Length: 622
Image (cartoon, rainbow, N blue to C red; front, top):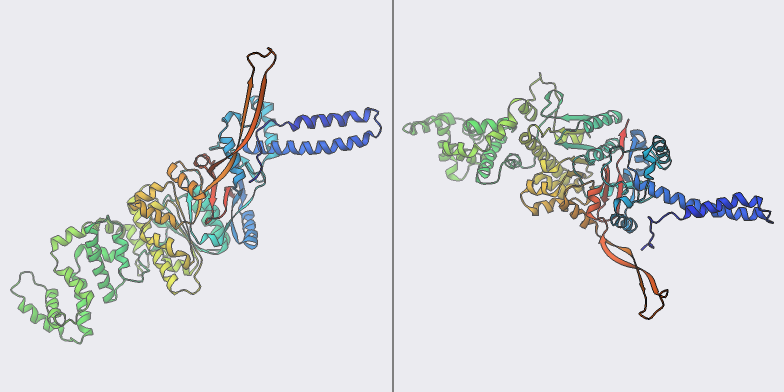
């Protein structure tokens, strides 16, 4: 442990420096022999004391002024290239490794009244001349590429606790463990993502961004960097169809049951969801059996009007594959037998033929059996059950939204490109999904959930079948708006498929409310091995991060004094004493109060159980 240093005592070295300076001025006129030797000694002493004064002033200026870092994109890329070559890491701003030393100073400051924290003399700002002098002094001590924050929030002294700052590294190897970005509104999450996404784009990795708030500045930055790097930029926004691509969210799957699962998971849990899954699953398998491609539009059609047409086509194919070339004649015979039943149709005759010739001998087909079960199900009961899924399907599969999510490949008048997640990854494109959740949250959450399910399906395919998986960076802002079971699987198994996920939230409670229980929330958090935490208002989340970082020991200087006089002593006689002692105290390495006090764009970062950093995100320019 480092020795205890009181950073807030008066700067006594100023007096010593002034005396040595006076000695240097007087000695040449003193008439002393070898006065020049004494001047040299005085110069060395003055240099030593001046250095001590400079360090004290620099520390106090650093903790008393809030700065913002600006960084040109070309300089960022130069830094990134150097860091990738030297330490195989990404650049995450300017900062330092947070250790016991910084925790010690932080606790010392937190015990002090805010008015006692030394800084710029207050009299400077009371006059115009003083304010100009204040600006000059600040410019001398200002960090490189920095501007003063004129509308500061949080505690200015946090970033100034370490005078020797450097480039904060975020190692690519650690990124495979996935990363949480936490912060309240306006703390700097989006600017953090700008720095990360800019580097990912120029690195050449696939980038998929899901932004429920559709941040215009972030979108412009991603589009601009794609143009600069010569990358394919894709923009999807259901609220802006003319400028959006078309994106099929059920294009990729390994099992047909994945398609109804993606739809059913958007509904509330219960028996109606289970029945809706069952009926949609039967329709999807029926489409695949006859050679059609399931889309949201076709699923809506069969949910609304029933599967009679689909069953007709499926039985037609089945009869032909099983050598019944004259099946229509035999169906007519079956219809004659069914003539007494009201409402008997051609499909009923086909079903009767299928049952008598195949099903009864256990030679049927499970897909057709499922379709027949739906066909003979009570129509009124079927409509009550499927009614819970119809509004959702109606929103996703009709109108302009339907054209974007269930694109018609034969619609040559629509010139918008058709993409899916597998195609995006194979072509190493960059996808920015702006979801505009403020104006239409229900539809946007459904779209995000289905697209992320498609991401999970492609992730599983890469994990199972690719020998050299591509590098894919997935960024999800406001994870509570889009998380589902498939996203949890991406976080759990995505590392083997080359996926690096960044997810953001404002509070743990958002996740718990979305997932329904604390166990699921902890499962998600357990898969986020790295944490980048900006200012938080939620105490529960701040406490969770503080506990993840761990504890340390600090030293407290305790001073006590006493005086006493004896009953028979002379009036001038007394005894007294002063004692000082250092006591150890176990405290959090990063107290929750510090997380609440972080200024905008400043963060604490914990890397996979290793180092802890305090840093500041730059504002990109150019």
